[in-house]
Length: 128
Image (cartoon, rainbow, N blue to C red):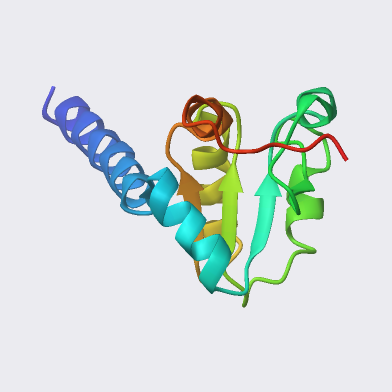
């Protein structure tokens, strides 16, 4: 029984630490826009190609989180340059951000609320 309790406790701590590290770099739209304007960055949209085609933030690269080659494609992005990442709601991009940290990216920021939040504040999208 004690071993089971210890194992469950360890799993809980690991899950909690992942959630904490993810929350730490979730940023609001205003800060995301400020970073877009002031820093050299790579902007990555991790939605599907179909979602991307419906409208995305200008200058974004599309690397589908659900794609079979996501890890390979994301590892081709410079890990030295700051990365801004987003998806539909912030869930996939939060998971993508964790993968990027596992791949030793230096700075990754996730758009809290994703493209849904971006559109809700009447920010522009492009289909080009």
